[in-house]
Image (cartoon, rainbow over all chains, first blue to last red; front, top):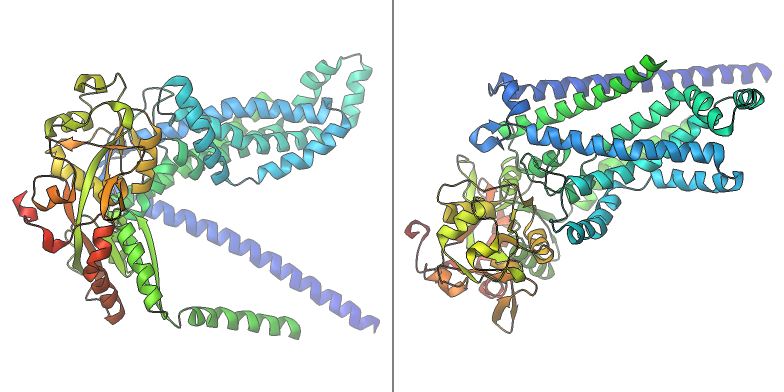
Length: 293
Length: 280
């Protein structure tokens, strides 16, 4: 009886191990296949259609039907709205996260924590819809522009990444050992000195992760910004001008892109570029954090 | 372990059987032009009411989406305002003629424009309605994306080889164009009659909240399209990949022969045309 149980336990363990191993292997293989496929299709624009990388990156005219494949307007659009979201939503989110962790009355913090975690799950289409129905008319009435454009998309994205940044920043602050807080206060530091000189530096890498995931959510967002960006495939002259991003342009054009056409190759190249930009932004943030250590 | 196997077997069985259960009846799918969408959608409803064993799914996406999807055999019918070029495998079924209006926000104060003035607006050379005798309002061009057949027809019939200025907004369906023109002061765009007009007791009138422009003094009416006086119109095509099967062919014939529906929704019967596309 006892021997049978031990046998069973042993078998269960090896089954679990095999499951975990095969899941990891499956994950790694699928990521490699995905990257390989994207690289293969994404470079056809240059290898099969013989367009220059220089034109793709820097030309302002995107009209693949006539052979012009400049993606500069979309690259600028993506970088701008992501940069705006991080510049506005990043510091704000970190500040709120620090506040909830260190300064808010415990009861308020306990109530807000689950509320913010629920907000992380709001689908992007909801943000886009609210942007379209509330923000666009507001900006239109205030500025006399169409209301669609970089400003609207930047604000929508800033709001969208806030719950993610706040929630992760708060977690990062909470895992800082209490001994640091106590030690700092015992040395006579004020509350503000404790937070700014001791706790925030100690939580630095966790706070960086909060910003990185904010960036990741912002740069990959397609639907919400497509609804408020105006989708003009031109280089915008100002905050209030309509623009387009790599993501929203792929959404706009993918349905009509015939298999093997220049349009389809250009969209694949844009997807590949989006991946590279997202990866390098994340590496950059990690590098900056390590540098500051 | 055996219970796990039984569940797995059940799940696998369900996966294999489910599609067959769902597709015991005939399903026809259509995608493409949002200019032709109202007609195909209404016809599909009527046809399904009469034939309970046929299911028809209709979506938009734009003419080029319709052509790309039917070429890839992703749908049975590809709806388009423009001719599919260099695709010999596609069979063209002309269903009707559609007229297209140039529409504006009602506050622009201009009711009629010449073709040359339209070119200047859409090429971005004229930027304020004041320059055309209207209100002192900035012109906001609302374009359709490259996948749109409506855009193709407009460029072909009006722009005379000039490129569209795309610094304004882009809306990806007829319905969203009309909503955007309604809510944006100074807006101008182009859309199918079926989207810009409503029909009541056989009389069609411009939808509330937008204005339609006359072009060189010719109003955008069905009559002016049939006589060739009004320039922006095109044949509406439904494409199939090779010759259609019996069910698909019957549905296409149903659309083509339903003159009451075609007329009621603001389209024009092919037989009423007194000019052909080559006359333009």
